[in-house]
Length: 268
Image (tube, rainbow, N blue to C red; front, side, top):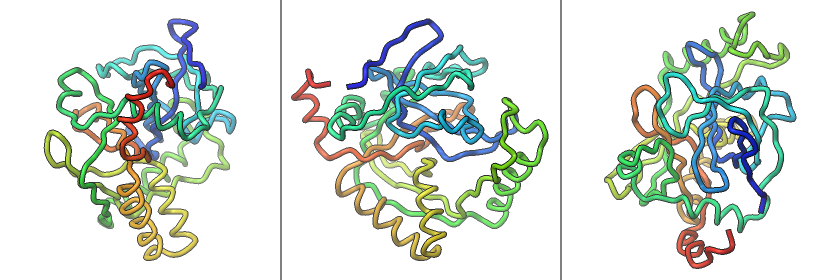
């Protein structure tokens, strides 16, 4: 088990669980929503992270343990949010063992979102029921606008809050489809678009290799059949401005992992 400690008031560590696909905002340019849990299973949201401008040694993946310096953000009252010092991000470990990953996830799982919201939480690990994976093709206008935003941001001299863009970096390629899950919770039925970078990257990789039609077939096989059959959870987060819940991550977690973790509390 990787040991997580807090050395200073503004220095902390967490295990990365969420890395959403890049999006271009009006203020800071291309950013990635990132979040994870600390050693006490507390959720933390890191913002703003211009992920593709990070040094290669800083570019973390899911299950990496990162150390970072932070301050409380202005204009964001969500309790889990931290304004991260971009240059301070450092990968210091990795959770390798599958059993450990399962236990770390299992102790944070919820089956509804209303109680989380009422408790003042804006991040949650949700176990969906009756999950159905599907996709919708973006309109030509929406897709063209997304591509234009990445191209325009990339071409600007002062293109981000950090001024760190490597000019060899190519504009990000968004997917022409929005991938979604419809599912049931304790609070009722929901449908949400998956913002998980892994899902978008998987489609784009398969599209380049096999073509769009075959890529969609493989997407359905993995995320529509394999994940629901074996078990998975949705890393949910609320929108800063609107407060609605969004699917920020899709993570495999075996059915029954919660019960197993509860029966072995001393192994975490």
